Length: 311
Image (cartoon, rainbow, N blue to C red; front, side, top):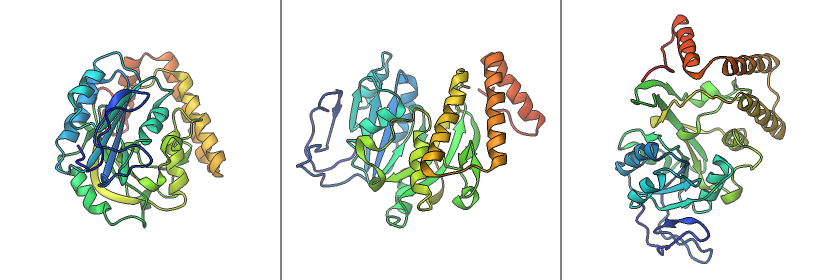
C-alpha cells in the first residue's frame, strides 16, 4: 500500500511469505518512510481477516505499511492474504510461540514512523481515521512517543456496537486496573518507532501481558498523548474457557509489577485476587453459553446493557 522508492524485495528470507516495496538489507535505506506500520497476527482467522483488510483498503490515507504475521494457518487465511497482497506489504507464515513472538518477527520489517497492532477481525474506524490521526501525530514527536485513541467494541457475529473504550490520560493516570496501573487497549495505541527494537521489542517471558509490559515501561517515564477519536472497531470475542489462563494472567502481571518496581494498593490487590478466584470458579462450573447469559442478567440487574449475548 505504501508507494516508496526503495528496492522491491522478492521474498522474506527464511519464511514462507512475500514482501513488496521495501529494502530490508542493512546496507540499503528506505527513501520514503511510511507514516504508519500496522501489524496483524493471524492463525486460522481467514474470515475475520477480511474485515481488517477491507478497512485498511478503504483508508483515504495511503502512506501505510501493513505486515501480516501468520502462525502457520491451515484454513483459508493464506488465501485471504494472497487476495490482498496489493495492500499487504510484508507477510509470512510459520509456527510461532504466541502473539508476541509473531509481533516481534513482524517488527524486524517495520519501517513506519508510528506502529499500531490490530487483531484479525479488527477494523480501522472509518475511512478517514488514519488521515485524521496523521494530522494529530505528525508534529507530536518527540514530546510524545505513545499516543492512543478510542475503541468501539462490537459483537462477533453481526458486529453490533456494544460499548466504547478509551478515556483521557488524566482519567487513567494513577488508577489501578487488573492488578496493574490502568492502560489503554493495544488496538487503540500508536507506538513511535524509537520504542521498537525489532525482534526484541516484546519480552519473550510473557504470553498474555506482553503489551502491558511494553506500555508500562514507557508510559511510566512519559505521559502518552490522548487522541479523542475512535480509531478501531474490535470484536468482543468469546469468554475464556481455560481456567488456568486466569491465573497465568495474574502471574504475568505480578512479574511486570516486580520488574518495574510497582506495588499495587492493598485493597486493589485484594479485590483483584477475589475477582480472579470468582472468575475461575465460574469458568470451571458454568458452560460458556450459560455463563454469557448469567453475566448479562447480572449486568441488566445492575443497570448496564447486555453485551455477551448480543448478536
